[in-house]
Length: 326
Image (cartoon, rainbow, N blue to C red; front, side, top):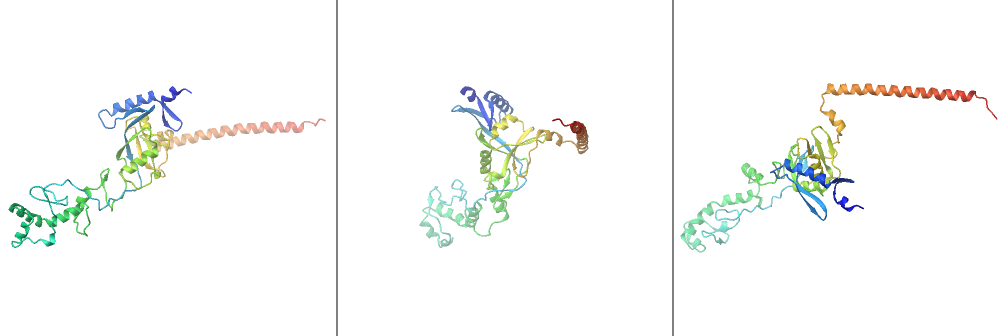
């Protein structure tokens, strides 16, 4: 077996290979097209295996809604603690030291209780700083609920809910929560995933769904290479999407990789795709021409078999008229 020849081949599907030199030429063209952009691909050799890695653009082509994982309302968002921020959940003194939590119901801000504050605050400056803390207490409670620390009943205003939504995860600009966790991405909008040339189609699908926390099964979807001519080629489970993208060329105005439902899309061959964009009158004239050609072929076959039928009958009659010989 010629192992050196085998090592120079790169798999691009089941029982399909391409020479490493040819793939390098395609890769060079690909990187020149995306020069200076993060879509350029890198390659390396690991244990005599040629590996290409980088970002792959995938367009959304879904017709049905997808289900996204809902964010947990109890998820904490902790901003960095500072002396001017109360989101960290602790009280800071004038010198930045952490003081004991102040129990709000037990403290009354009056002139009579001023000496009680001196037990905890040694300087007049500290006691003066405590009064704004007490006055801002209602604001503190609403601020903590805004970031989803704890739900405190129906106390959120419309502006609060808008502010919460900004913190939630988005997919192509879509902000979602427990009310909008089912939606359909805009057709043709683009996302990307970082993969390598050894990852098959099912692996890329699972990686993409996991990136956006999509609850749907990867078995519901497939990757298609869609050309501007209308040709649609489904990538098989044994295909390598990154290799397919390189071989198709870098220009997405010619072809794109789409994520689509398996049961909603049919493959369109090149022979069919070349007729898709014609106007209806032109297509009808094509059908008429094909019908005429079909009629001619049918008549030709009928004449041929009619002649054969006559020849067989004549031969049978000749055999019947011949006297039997002993």
